[in-house]
Image (cartoon, rainbow, N blue to C red):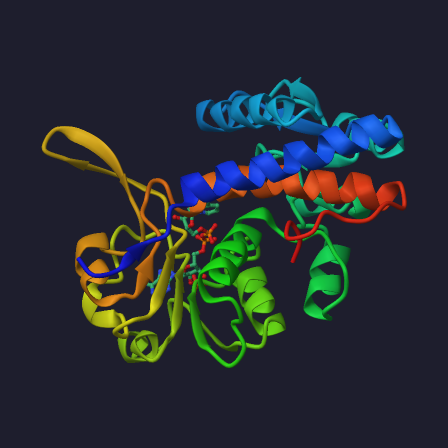
Length: 296
Ligand code: NDP
């Protein structure tokens, strides 16, 4: 193996420490504790685990954490009424509605009901537009985490060729926007892309956000490239289940210059960036300086 392993777990710990230090200063100097409200509808076990760990880490960095667990058959009107209350609650600076929502609820409608200034997931249509036009916005947590790791590794990203495999609204598209904003030359690949392997082999930065276990192998990777593996796929093998990324780690690590592992790469950065976004939202809401190095 030649590649440097980009340790997302260690990086996320540093981000959370930075957030905690900034929160401590806010509390001491301005009597302000950023507040994050997480709304969970239904009892999806994976979502419950995420929500619990978000709540725990929110408290650990000194923020206020509020959880709203609603029954799976909650009506759209009741959910929208809760969001309205949270929008008006001055002690809440970030609102996250855990996705996916049960089928009877319109996700777009619900997400766009969140005050864009409190939309710490960065999914509100206003934030999508602000990001696309290079303006100050709330940035989706997973791509923000990837960007932080890339900036840390490369310094400047200017002029690098980036290929993002995947065009979802939550990862692929915002990732491409962020890379473009940092002056990469960006190509977005997807399931209809022709000669995708050759395209990926031209990338100085290769971001995989596909949801297909180990699809990208070492022969897709340009020697020395930086590979960011967003994929989280549970696979069965030898009677055990394990997590793998969208990149075949062993073969890619022989060719790449740097690579994120799964688990322990992008995943831990996502919650750290949620906390960073909540802090940013609290600073903006109170007209205070934003934390350095924690935003796009
Ligand atoms: P989506 O399913 O929404 O999007 C997948 C994208 O991959 C689509 O654009 C699709 O193309 C493309 N794709 C599918 N098959 C191929 C193929 N054979 N060749 C090229 N492109 C293909 O997934 P998400 O963006 O939500 O998530 C992607 C992965 O990242 C998943 O494994 C998910 O679990 C993980 N994830 C991890 C997070 C973290 O915190 N680390 C957070 C969010 C997601 P098309 O549009 O043409 O269908």
